[in-house]
Image (cartoon, rainbow, N blue to C red):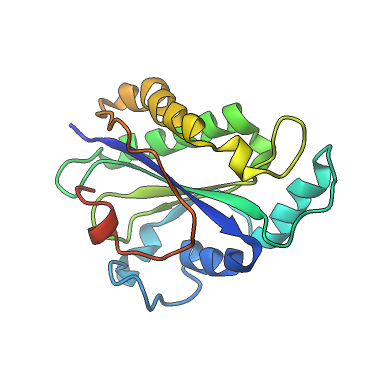
Length: 196
C-alpha cells in the first residue's frame, strides 16, 4: 500500500528563480544527482505558468491588503506531494488522478487563484511526485506564510489531505510527517524522502 507525504518549503523572492529552474528543468542541476534527464519528457504540468515571479506579483497585486511587503517575506509556499515508493506506487492513470485531486484540494482550501504552478516529476529516483506552488495570502488579504501555514495547519493538511484524497487511492497516512522547510536547500530524494 503506498503512503502519502506532503512537505512544504518557504520560498523568499531571491530563491524563486532557482526553484523555477528546478521545477521546469530549465538548467541541469548540480546539486540533485537523482534527476534522470532522459526521463524528463515524462514530466507534465497540471497548472503551468511561464514566469513564477510575474505570477506571484499578480496574486499579491489582487490581494485586498496591499501593505508594504517586507524584503525578506516568504512569497511562495512550495509543496512536494508524493504517494508511493519506488517499489510500491500508484499506476500511471491513478497517479494522474491522485495529483489532479491534490491540486483541486489545495485550490478549494486556499483559493485556485493563489496556485501558480503544479508540475509532476517522473524523472527522479522513486515514484513520481507533485510540485505545487501557492502564494500564501491570508483570509484578510495579507502575504503571510507564517500565519497561514503554522504547525497546526501543516498537521491539518496532512490529516485532511489523507482523508479527502489519499484514502481514495488506498494510501497510508504518515502521522506527524507534514514538514516545513525554512531555508531553500536542494537535497537528494534518496536522503530526504526515503521510501518514495
